[in-house]
Length: 586
Picture 1 (tube, rainbow, N blue to C red):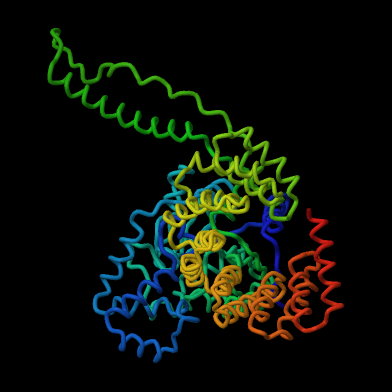
Picture 2 (picture 1 turned 120 degrees about the horizontal axis):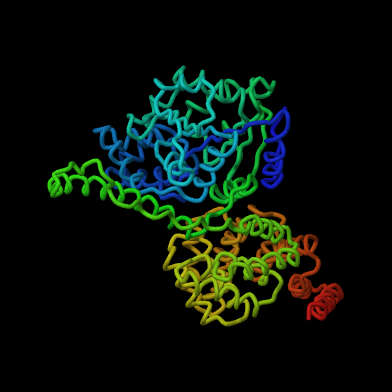
C-alpha cells in the first residue's frame, strides 16, 4: 500500500459529508510548531536558525566541529532541533525554560486557532494532540467559545483521556509550558507509556489531521511508524497529513504515510486551512459590535459586583435614623439589560473562499461575480477589495484592478500584501515610479519577504537600476533559495549587466527546479545565445516552444538563433510565426 493525495477542497467536503448521518466519523487535530507562527511564536526551523547563529558567534570552530561530528549541515539541520536546544542551553537548563516562556508569553490566538476552538466546542471533533507547550488552543477556547477545555499537560494526567468526553480536549505530549516541558534530546527519544495508551484510544476513534507538524521529534514519529499497521488495517482510523505548499514529503513522514495508507493534502497555511474548515462547519465571523458588546458585558458585571459590596459596606457604617440594619436591604437598582445582540452576519467568508478557489482554478469570470458582490456587501473590507483587484489583474483589466487595490491600501495603508499587489499592477501599466514607491513601502514593512523583494527588483530592473535590482533579487533568493521564479529574475538582471556566466548558473538552477516552465527555458536559451553556445540555446528555446507555442517572444528568439546559425529559411519561418502571434495578441 502507499499514500494517496487529495486536494484541500476535496478533503473539506469529505470531512463535512462524513461528520453526520447514522455512522459519522470523527476527526482530531495533531499540531506542531508550524501552527503557531502566525500567532507570534517562532517555528522550530526559525529557532534552529537563531541558535545556529548564536552558537556560531560564541565559538565558530567548536560549533563547526560539533556539527561535523553530528552530521549536521544546512540540508538537514532542522531535524536536529532538540540537539540544538541541548547545546544552546547546556550549562543551565533553566535558561531554556525561561527562553521558551519569553517567546510565548505575548502570543495571541490567530484566526486558525479561533476556528479550531469552534470545531472543538461545536462539533464532535473535540480533541487536539500537540507537541507545542503554549496556551494558544485553550486561550482560543476560553476567549472565543467561552468554554472550559480539558487540558492534559502531563503524562501523569493521561489516563483522563481514556474516559469518554465531549468537552474540548487538549493533549500536550511534550507537556505544558508551566509543567517542565520536554525539549532535550533524551526526553524526546520515546513517548511515555501513558501517552501511548491514550493516543491508541484517540486514534482508534478519531481520524488524525496532521498540520503544522514537521515530524522532527523521534518520540511521536517513531510511535506512529511502529503502529502504522494499526492505521493500515483500520484498527485505528487512517490519517490525513497536511503539507505546507511545496514542502517535501520525505523521511519518516513519507515512511509513515506509505505504511499507514494515509492521505497527503497540500495547503497554503494553518490559518487559511482552519478558516475554510470552520466556515464549512457553519462558523460565521462575529461582527465587531458583538465582540465589543461582550467586552462591555464583562466589564459591566465586574462594575456591578464592586458597586454592590462597596454600597453594602458604606450603608453598614452609616445606619438609618431608625437604627435598622440596611446591609440586607435593596442594594439599588440592577444595571439595565445589555444591548440587543447583533444580527447574524451574512456568510461572506464562505463566498470569499469560493471566489478564491475559482480564481485559482482560472475561472475568472465566475470569481469576479462573487467578488463584486462581496465588495457591494462589505465595501470597507480591505481583504475583499484586494481580492477583487487580484482577479481583475488576472483578467488584464488593469485600470479596474488599480481602483480596487487602491481602496484596499486606503483601508489598510500598512498592509504589505496589499501594497505589493498595487505595485504589481502599477508596474504592469508602465507606471514604474509609482510602482517603485509602493514596492519600497511593502519591503520596508516586511524586509524579509522574498515575494516583495522580487517585485521591487522587477521594477528597479525595468527602470534600468540594475545594481539595486540585483541586490533586492539576491536577498529574495537568499531567503528562498529554491524558488525558481526568483532565480529567473536574478538571472535576467545578471544577463542585462553582461554577467553571462553568473546568469547561466542561475538560469540553469531555475530550469532544474521547474523543467517544464517555458519562460525559464527561454531565459536560459537567451543567455546561452549571448555566450555563443548556439546549439544549446536552440535546444532550450525549442523545448520552451514545445511547452508553449503561443508566445511570440519565444519564436522571435528562435529566429535570432537560427539566423546566427545560418539557417535562414527556418529563421524566416520562425519570424513570420512570431509576427502572426503578435497580430493575434494585438
